[in-house]
Image 1 (cartoon, rainbow over the protein chains, first blue to last red):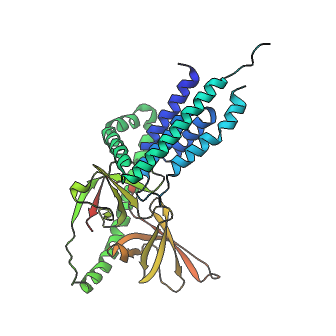
Image 2: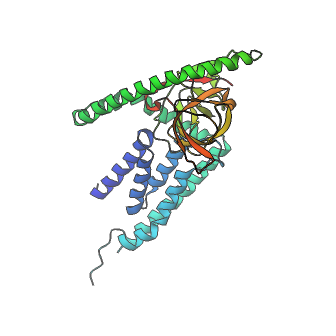
Image 3: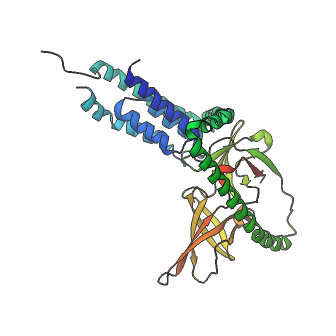
Length: 87
Length: 263
C-alpha cells in the first residue's frame, strides 16, 4: 500500500472515530482534507454517517447539512484535483 | 517524447468519478429511504454508534490514561471535577430559588395531578460531537418514552426534549441548541430565549424588569420547570431592552444519567 493511500485511510479513520467522540469540526476537517486530494467516496460516507448519527428527526425540516456539505466539497473540488493532480 | 508525470491517469480519474457518482446517488437514496421509513437507517447507525461508545469506555479511559497524556489528563480531570463541583453548587443554589417559586405555583395548581412518571436513562453518546445540539440516551419505546418527553437533570433543570425514539436509543435535542426558541419567565415577565448552543441562551428583556445574576428561568411550556439561570446581564442607557444571558447550571460533559419525564 502506498504512503498516500495510508494517509487517506488514516484521515478517514480519524474522521469516522471523530464523528463518535470528537468535536464536530474534526470530521468536517477530515472531509475537506480528503476532498482536497482524492475523489473520496469516504468523505461523502463520513458526512452521511455524521447526519445519521446526529441529525434530529423532522427531515426535511432538519436538513442533512454534513451530507450536503460533503457532496458539495467533494464534487466542487473535482476540477481543482483534475487541474493540479493529473498533469 | 516522454510522458508527463501523472498522479492519476485519465482512466482512473473517470473511474474515480464514477465511484463518486455512485456513492452520491446511494447516499441520496438512503436519506430518502430513511425519511420514508421514519428513521430506520438512523436507528441502525445510532444503535451501532451507541454500542461503540458504551463498549469503548474502558479503551477511552486507557487512552487518556497513557503516560503521554498524563499531564494533560490530570489537569483536565482536575478542571472537569472543579467545573462539575461548581456547576453542582450553582444548580443547588438555583434549585432553592426554583423550589420556592415552584412551591408557590404548585399551591396554586393543586387541581392538577402532581404525579409525574420518570425513568432514568444512561447517556450513550458524546455531548460535543453533534453539530445539531443532540445526544443519545439508552432508552426506547419499550421503556415507555416517546418523542416530546422532557429530559431533566438531577436538579430538575430541563436539558432537552426527546426528538426521536429508535430501537435501543433515543435522540435528545438540547433545549438551548443553536437557534432554538424557548418560552421563559423572567421575574414573571414572558420572554423568548434564543439558544446559543452548549447549554447557553440569551433573551431581550425590558429595562424595567428586575433581573439579577443567579435568578432561575422558568418555562411555562415545559411544565413550569426551570430551564436555566441568569448568568450575565448587558444593559445600556440608550437601549430600552437589556440582554440577559442564560446558562444551564449543569455540566453536560460530566452527566452520565438523565431523567425522562413522560408527557
